[in-house]
Amino acid sequence: MAKKKQVQTDDGWTVVAGSATTPSNNDKNGNAEASNRAQQEARPRKTVNGLTVDKLAHEFRGMQKRFNDTLCAKNLERMLRLRDGLWTLDNAVCIGVGSFSIDWEHRYRSLWQFVLFLNVVEIDPSPDDGNLFSLYLLTICEVMGKQNNHISLYAQDPAFTPLDTEFLSSLNITPLTSTAATHISSSSFVFAPFVDWFLLLPHFLKDKDPHLYVGNEVLRDYAAFANTRGKKDVLTECNRLGKGFLEGREKRKVPGFDLHGGALEGLVVYWKEEGDSDEEG
Image (tube, rainbow, N blue to C red; front, side, top):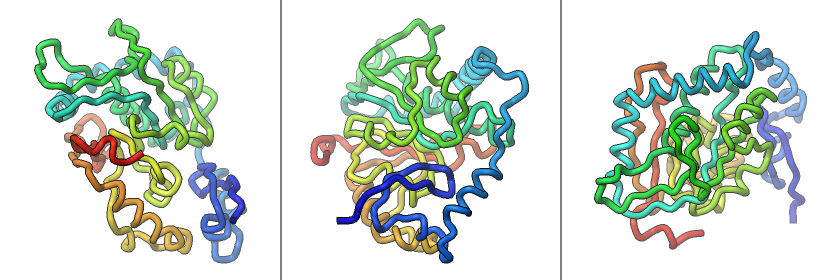
């Protein structure tokens, strides 16, 4: 049996890998370690000048308020409320959202994606809503005066800075390093905005059956995108995992969002169809 070990991908992720996923698979000349190191050094590392947890939290709350007034938020809430059946979630896991504090062009993309994550977490049916939909969730925003201890929240991204992790902790979200997949179960909400398929499927969704997923569209065949040796090595497995994930799931597009071009574009929502929640574990 191949010995499993932790390896670091070109995107900075530390994942558990067996013989089929080794650093050499990412580089024909066996120089993956040097390639990883070079890419990590090339990433922006400087945080926004003068940014503190309090300032970041204030900025984030303002973005939440702006998001709540959008058609995207209203249509997303309507979409999830109209879904038949009872949703009982134990946790929510955010994967690959990026850094909220690094001074780079994608900072606000990360923040808006995180706004979407917590918006889904906070969705609650209206008192007069007669359907069976119910999310027993921990609401993050303290100003809303809600708190529910039925759900745990986790977030993982190799780009997180100490300021990011302190910010997450202030929201009662546990920042993770390399254990996100261990928290995913059939009662999980998984949020994975734009995590590459060759990482998402074999390292985060393999042998998992989350009840709710928001992220990239999952495909049955990734052959058209397997353009490197490392991707080709996991193609067969990813195709199998993609087909399995799609079984018994409904798909909807995340509604259009106008406050940031591209932040939420292309994201989709998957949920398990009624009667399928206990078929897989």
